[in-house]
Image 1 (cartoon, protein in one colour):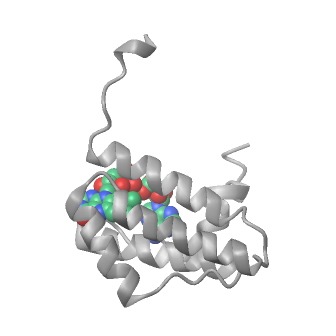
Image 2 (cartoon, rainbow, N blue to C red; image 1 turned 180 degrees about the vertical axis):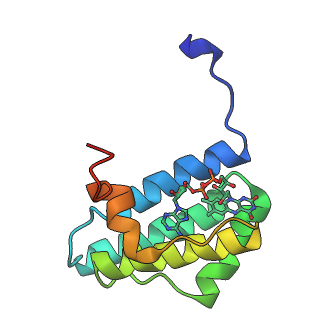
Image 3 (tube, protein in one colour; image 1 turned 90 degrees about the vertical axis):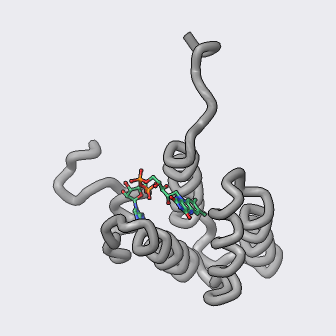
Length: 116
Ligand code: FAD
């Protein structure tokens, strides 16, 4: 029953957010226009301001200062986001993700066909 779904807890919210962000990162234009680059920077800054987990948002604000958004190309943005996610992973004791695999994980499916 859709009316019985519950508010997202921190982990569900994180999973959903990363899913959206990584999916965006591997499907944006390969060479974003100036405006699109600016919008990607704004997307991350808005998230850092409004993300509904206060200490996660504060942490994100710091990370964006340490390693500013790189939206110079689809590849660079996808890799930048992967590194950001890995810094969060490290902080909370989750395994590091191999950033050479972002296209398989978030767009193309695994080479063994298991997502087909
Ligand atoms: P998630 O980390 O949600 O990842 C989902 C899937 O993404 C994984 O199953 C894997 O297939 C893939 N993946 C993993 N790493 C990468 C990567 N580097 N690149 C590409 N794909 C990857 N939680 C806290 O407890 N403390 C925090 O301070 C905190 N800060 C957060 C800040 C932000 C901006 C966001 C979006 C989330 C934050 N979270 C935080 C939530 C946390 O990152 C996880 O989302 C949550 O713990 C659920 O983890 P998960 O194991 O489901 O996998």
